[in-house]
Each structure stands twice: as structure tokens, then as C-alpha cells.
Length: 247
Image (cartoon, rainbow, N blue to C red; front, side, top):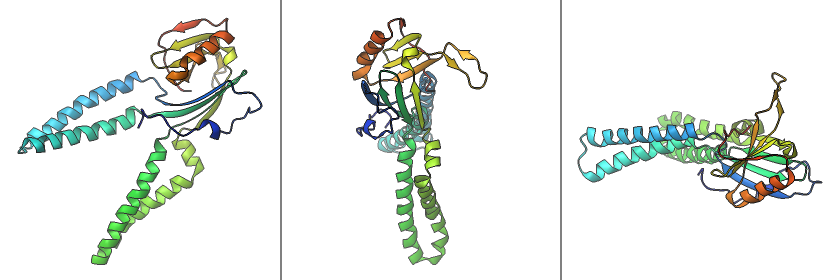
């Protein structure tokens, strides 16, 4: 789920480039690495729509008994909300390594990792059912195309590194934190923004309003912020919200 932090220690697994530089701090976090207001509004709207659809199915179909009505309306509502949240509450796992010169980071979206086993076991389960039906009626052999196809797709997904990298939106980047002109402290979401001048590769123009968001666990937020304050004394600290984009 989007709100559960990974227990696996990814810091030790990342292929860090600058291992010759001592790590001052490392951390990992699973977070919604984007501007969340539009997604939250969509979820609110879909919650109301799902509730109305559930009530319509429960009371508009002439179902008898309060249990049946609760079961139908609740099931439709829950299913719709889960589908909506799978789109509006996508998350990324981001792993950071802070040194005296830079921040190295790896990030990816873990959702595709949960899709592959679902496809695998769906293919296996439906394949077993189809094989049993084939023993009863050989005409059901055509139905085996579906499970076999799902199994092939799952295998291709599992073995294609380029597909996994694309589907997971996998990124590796560095942050020259000492070059920050301003420090933005977004304490409500435990995000620190570093105002870095950035050359747009498309236009060649220097972007002076670029703010690089760094996502931090609540337990380490104050430590990281204090470190930046101490080591970038000329950069003013601006408290409050800022537009969050993971780029």
C-alpha cells in the first residue's frame, strides 16, 4: 500500500558511484513524489461519485434486505475507491546518500513489482481451472489461450530490464546541494527544497526558479535541515509550502 514504508534496506543495495566519499547521512522513503492537491481533489470527487453509484445499485435495483444492500453498495464503493487510489496515490521509493559534496539518489515506482506476481498467479490459477474443464470437454482448449497469454506477458515483464526500467520510471541523479541559493522547508510533508540554478537542455536558458525537492522521513527531517542550515549559511531558509515536482 502507498502509506506503508518498505522494511527492506535499499541503501545497502544501491550501486553508489561515490563510495570514496564518506556518507554523512543515508535514508530511504516511500512517498507521493508530486504535487498532491489535484490528485486529492480527484479522489474526493470519485469518492462522492462512487458513493452515489453504490447507493443507486443498492436501492435502484430493488434489492431485498438491508444486508444485501450494504453488501452491494459497500462492495461497489470499496472497489471504485481502490481503483481510483491506484491512479491518484501512486508512490515512488527514493533512496538518498548525502556526502560532503553531493546527494546521490535512486528512485523508482514499485507498483509494477506488485503487478507481476498477480499476473503470474492469475495465469496459474485460471490455467488449472481451464485444464480441468478440458478434461471434461476438449472444446475448452481454446480457453487456454487467455491464461497462456497472461503467463507469457508476465514472463516477458519479469525478464525485460528495459521494460522494468521504463514501467518503474527508474531514475538515478545527483544533487549539488552546496550550490543552493535558497532552502525551502516544507515541514507539513517533510520535504526540503533546494533552489538550484539549472540550464534547460532544450532552450539553453538558465532557470533560476528551479527547486529540487528532497523527500525525507519525519524522523530525519530536522537532522537534514539543520545540516543544510549549518553548511549553506548564506542560503536563506524559507518556511512553508512550495510546488513539489520530482524531476
